[in-house]
Length: 215
Image 1: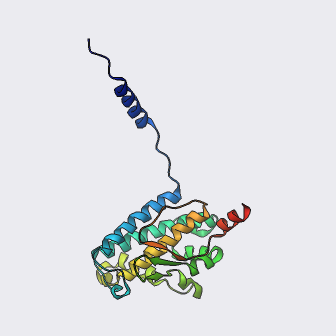
Image 2 (image 1 turned 90 degrees about the vertical axis):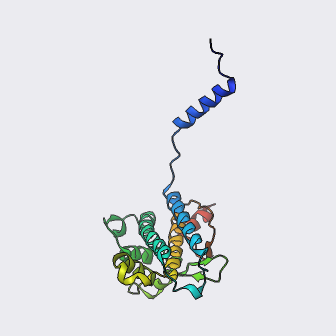
Image 3 (image 1 turned 30 degrees about the vertical axis):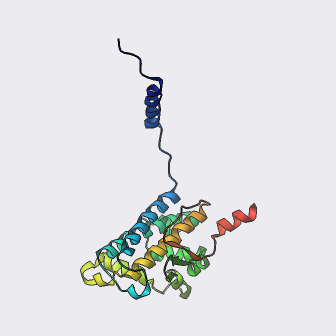
């Protein structure tokens, strides 16, 4: 007759079984966006290992920079939809099956123009300061150059390959950082820490200000 299993072995087996049966904790939408942002930031860090992040290299381009531009632009489109849902759930930006930047800009103009147009991001360990949404100050007709470049690269890669510059990539990821951070503030949630991207200046979302005022 085999000897009974050791008590610690039985406990370990039971623990593993419970661990396997335990449902995963559901992530919030804020955390999902932030997790993906951190992956994109890692891609930027990889680029920074071979190219100095400085204004002298603004016109540098290549496959890794193009990859970051396309990935960040795609995620920004998704994040803007989430932002519009958080601050203006009845807007066309939410109801439309395929909303575009013009739809999202209407939401920003109506609800959070001050926050977006004055937001400034810094790239740590460099002199770079970015205000990608500052173009909104001049009205709805003013084009966002980094978004225009993203779409040109997305739809006309061969002809516009050299337009996929480090400057475009940095402005896109800074724009995404701002949107994701404001989604968190509007949802009264916190975000995780970043490695090389951070606020330089920004105005809080009204939802966060009201929350602090009520305390």
